[in-house]
View (tube, rainbow over the protein chains, first blue to last red):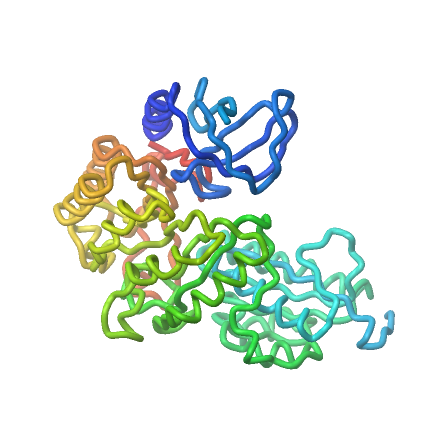
Length: 80
Length: 367
């Protein structure tokens, strides 16, 4: 496994349990996909929220609590 | 060949390369729209009879993509599928005379400062009063904001100054006006771009004014996030860090291309910095803005890069732990300073990991 991939994984695990303000960019399959302030579009990490749980308009901000994370993506639930 | 009156022209703009090029296409399309022309971006409907390709000429892969796209569209023109084909942007600026000879079935090639001429060829007038007016191609809620053109840095490997000229900052009030228009159209996030963000203001105001610009932009109603891309390390204005920390609209994020860390490579690259200075700058970022996400990009396979240099880079990536990282392989570009050096690393049988891999979108670093 690549060096940076490990670093990214470690950072992402630290985010589990925390809540972030997320800007939603698009819907893809079963997920609404957004970003935190720490992520630029297209190149950085994304935050995925299950579309079956809530409805989010694209371009809206929401508070998301991170429930789990992989190397480059965070998964969470809307808290408000 | 189909013949259509000018009135029925439909123009498809194809953009290759970076966000700065996307921005230029958006300006072009804004002008065309203001001329009441029918314009679309990268449409796959094939219903346009005029195509404009905004090319990229930065590195090998990009140039290849530009050539392929021009050839593909030139063939469509030969087949009568489109009436007119125009090529603009960096690649066209850099290789105009070669392209005119090699791919002649293009109506006209334009450079990076030829927008009025390109518009004229498309049957439109350049409207000076439209400065800041664009037809954005990104999702409605974010947009790029190009705060300067060109670059005054002497980096040995970089062909950008050949294509984009000297650094030219846009005035703070013009950028605020542009941001207001964008916000009115629903943009919530501004992504500040330029060849070199750090230099902002030095040409126009005789001092670095990025912090002032950030403060001014953050007052624009509707803008909630402001993000910084392409901040050059040398001469980084430290007052920007205070704005990032204290202004809640400015994202705790910085994209700072560092390229390498070995002193000998940095020197040859003419980056104006050292390993020690770079580490000090990164420490300052993290001290002054706790939790800041740092993105960088690196070049591997630069001429003369030794195995030792590479190991130093690898160790440093491990120790620094960047939040985001992109790695590029060196591209040997004619008319750059580094072109005078022997392209020894990429031509030799270096370990695969060192020269393999192109642009790593998902920061898959070949270490």
